[in-house]
Length: 94
Figure (tube, rainbow, N blue to C red):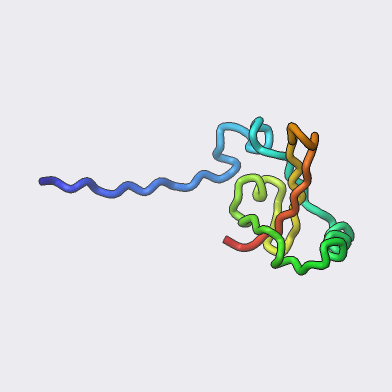
């Protein structure tokens, strides 16, 4: 019985996608946070950066805003009950 050769799919970069990822309806707003705002958030939650949820530096939305490992990203999502909710993500290397 013949075996099928494995095919590898090349990962597409942001430039190769047929659309801008941040313009998609289901992708929430992503923003890089300035250091002053990050220090305020860390004090407010009495936490260190590694205690926040992570986002990989290879995430398409993170790449589109130029997020690098060590940065914080503010994600703003629409919510039916709260109107708008804000989440914070710490960027880590993939």
